[in-house]
Figure (cartoon, rainbow, N blue to C red):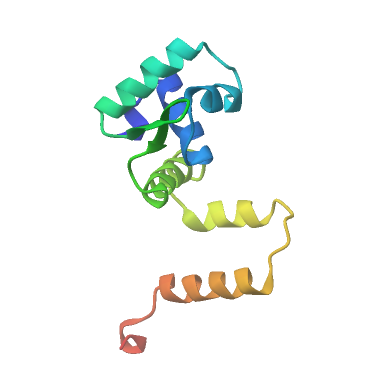
Length: 128
């Protein structure tokens, strides 16, 4: 559903996901190309109607947060990036990410090794 959102609504939603929670002013200041508070309120209302955003009353007005779990949103967005820029190849995407030069901690490297071991195709005789 997120992929079908208009560009600005998607940007507001993704910004709110990064913030995890925020008022209209927080979302506006976090946007790369800010728009008016009323435009953000309108988009947040549309996102709420679509079931993507929840709101609750705060001391200074409404506070918004993404309704879906952030992990589900992240997985969907990552799949879109992999399909678009890496021809659907998770291995190519992972190679590109690792090629960005950030060093991995020992724990991160071990976690990646476990995931890779689970994902590797094995011949039928090697499977238990």
